[in-house]
Image 1 (cartoon, rainbow, N blue to C red):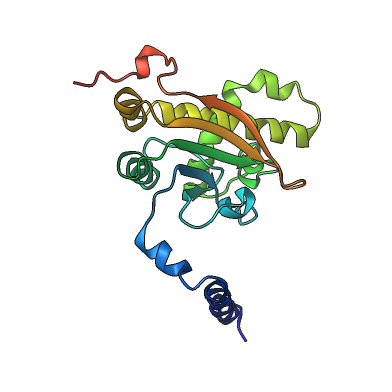
Image 2 (cartoon, helix red, strand yellow):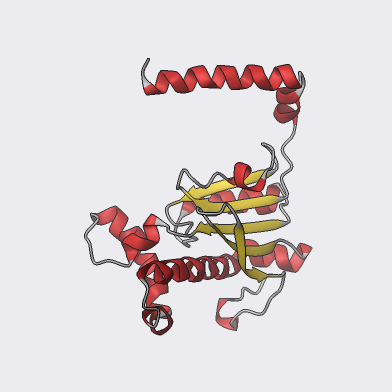
Length: 211
């Protein structure tokens, strides 16, 4: 049996198990999606949003990319953000990184990862540059990586706050709250590192004047 065939077989077993335990399980999922949370996480397969928060399908709307970045030219992310905030009316947006992130480690090197990945990782290099003095004062490499993970999460939350989608929702509906979290691969625990409530002060340069 090939690896992909095993996945299909496991899917059938999983679906049967769900129905055996609750015959209306899939009917409920098909009828309604009203998540309170948008999760912007890393693509790393060891950080599944539902599992590490012990939530059910339908409770968290999820977007994932390498190193959980919020980039203002990323139409994929911005469309997910717009849909979650404007149409699903989520109350919280969470950016969740994880300690030991490979994308963060890669961005801290001068290695050439070819054009597209180089372009992506450059956004993390910008975070490093902003916090260079603090990071380079940390002698242990693993600790330096983990601190950059935390700083990167904070910067991505700030990037969210700079979008017109978030600012309009803050002004009109006093939501969503923004959160920056970091997940520990070694202990399974989430470390909250940064929060922004609706209408938190921003540099006026980034504020939009809505009519």
